[in-house]
Image (cartoon, rainbow, N blue to C red; front, side, top):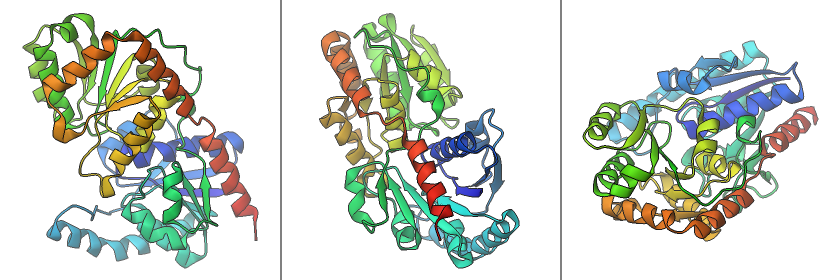
Length: 359
């Protein structure tokens, strides 16, 4: 079987594609899997040491980019569809998977024009524009949240959870002691300026954060220098990096996570059974990150802070309150672990194999 996965854009689209590629090859080593990305350097960093083939496609985002940028992105679509059709023919693709984001439409449309089986992966509680538009063209739609079902033809939808890499599952997590000694700050694969700023201010204002915690702070490439300089002026134990290559190990080592609320990030956090302070990205399409975070908060696995309420003092207050309440932290960790779905990739790949084999 030859599989092509449209995966470019952000880690929320890219990492599920890697998880599926690994699982396709685990279930059948003869399966050929190729990812289609944007060619950005960040994608190469996310690929790590995997030996999965990736091909670039010239596309740009449209949603929330302003009139000129959106028009520029739209003008690229026809040529992207044509190039995707040529690539799918050469690959003799049996299946195309769209993970959302702006690489999906040209590739999925190309597969539709060529009569190739088509699948969509929707990890968020509220689907993005790309998957909403492509829904009628898909044979199957795999969702992570029950709420997402209503946006697609119910006969096509399978509730499986967000596919995560095996490295997040094995070895299984140990029970949380309730103590918070290591704090992981991660605003997504590209970082988050608002979270970076609030964390710096929290560390400046709180003696306890400076003296009691080891901080691992992923800033994103663009904000690395500013955050490094800020930490140099406070006496805190902090490791500041632009990108964390081994996120499974880092998450396992963390006692508390501060993060954005993409569905994949939340799935990885719950796979490791970690309590979290969740700060939704306010400009996320249709507010899906806030919806994602509310599901986790209502389950008792996290504390949500809206960015409009985010300050250094408020963040320090939340972290200190958790440091002082080990029973609550243990409970949050248990509820986080209860949310995890570790067989999402396996279930998705099995369904895809059955789809390809069907008439």
